[in-house]
Length: 143
Image 1: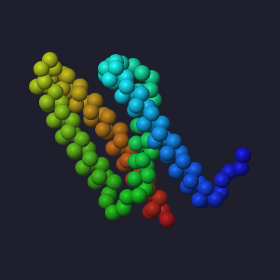
Image 2: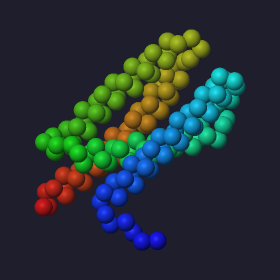
Image 3: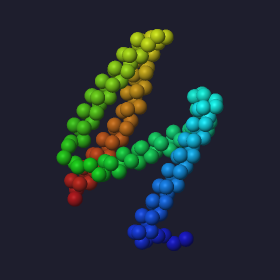
Image 4: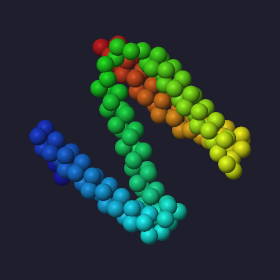
């Protein structure tokens, strides 16, 4: 099989892949929606399609982050953006942990665990986007 060199054909192939991905995602959501209605939330999450959908969504989000980091204007310092994002993440995690402690049936330890999980889940994308921004800044500085 020959590699495609024509840019129009490459773009068309990417558009076809995007359409196929969209149709696949709608199909998976339809199946998961049916499981949600018939079996409830636990039944839906037991379906292996749930795991495939979550993995695909996370990978798609990370790939989109790399494109958006390349598209940004590099007027802002990556360190400043990281520190602002970390501050907002700490505030949100603290507020969520605080309100979890006041929810009936939960303790302070549950609030700390929930806030900590939220912080870690938010920290991973922040560090990744910081890495992408510094990498792009270093590449622009060399040129």
